[in-house]
Amino acid sequence: MEYKLNLPGCYLKRKGCSGIKIKKLNTFDWLSDLPQAQEATDWVEVQFKNTRKGYYLNSNKIPLEKGDIIAVESSPGHDIGEVTLVGALVLKQMKKTHYRFDSQEVKRVYRKARPVDMEKFQEAKGLEHDTMLRSRKIAENLKLNMKIGDVEYQGDGNKAIFYYIADDRVDFRQLIKVLAEAFRVRIEMKQIGARQEAGRIGGIGPCGRELCCATWMTTFVSVSTSAARHQDISLNPQKLAGQCAKLKCCLNYEVDSYVEAQKRLPSREIELEIKDGSFYFFKADILTNHITYSTDRNFPANLVTITGTRAFEIIGLNRKGIKPDSLAEVEHKVEPKKPIDLLEQESLTRFDKRRGNGVNDNPSNNGSHNKKKKKIISRPQINNNDRPANPQVQTDSRSQSGDERTHPRHNDRPQRNGNRNQQSRDTDRNERRERPKRDEKPNQE
Image: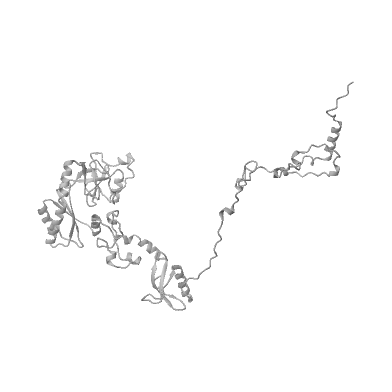
């Protein structure tokens, strides 16, 4: 069984809430996954009609979740509302709304709503529209300067709250007596503003979107015409007023940005003087930092648009007694930059050259990866004339002309036969002469 509470656009079930459209009064419970946070306090937040909320103590330890419909204590009787928040965040919301335990009477949660409670609740809600129309006629007959915007019945039907709008203070003591005799309920009068009434009714703004006061705004700040002047908006009451007949709340959204941007523009009262005459302020594009000047003070003539930086330059020159030739900025020729080919900077074969140890030529690899350079000791050279006639020295196959190698490691290798001194060469030569040949056999006796 589904129950419908007359709250901002949601249908609620008895044991939960499914498909609720999150409105401005709903607080996102980001601690819902933590059991210890949900059991941090017994206070719960309950929402009623017309953005009315209250905080109640769950002294009976009833397991409640967000979206449950419950019966709470009221004076007199009980009321029906929806649980909108439980756990540790309730204390934060109570602090935000300046809830005081000393001055306010602590009210408690009775039970979850029963079918009998919901039947009484629906009967009471069915009387609200007729009661509002009759109360308007009664206030008109009493010649009271007020407008009754809405009526809210309590869940048990024993009390009714009348929301009214008035510019001045109204003496409605006689009205309360007449209303109590006509409807046989306890009467409570509550004054609201025009913006709050527009938020309750809702609608579409001139921007094509739903009204801000009906979607996300919870507090209303006063709006003055100075916000329109800072943004250079025409002071047309029909365009500046919203559906509540007050100045639009969106005039305050960007006024701080315009005030900050105006600091980068010169005063509108300053005149710019050049050799041909004087120029007067005509209009300004605050966000783009451009100003348009005219040669006539009253109507546009010979309009010239310059930047705020150029305007400050001319003002500085006028203070020094210098009048420039024109308001236009001096054009500085900027040489076009040559395009840079990123592929041309690097060689495509830079990874083909590898050392024997597999280390690249990257200078960042210096350190433990680099091999230690061998020290080459210079020794005396031997002339070719001092060498023996037929030196039987074995030659390295790598030194032959057919198998020459060009690797720097092989070219820098010192020659073994060229670095030996003459004495060692003579000793080796004598030993080879005295050594018998392998093919010759010893003499047999």
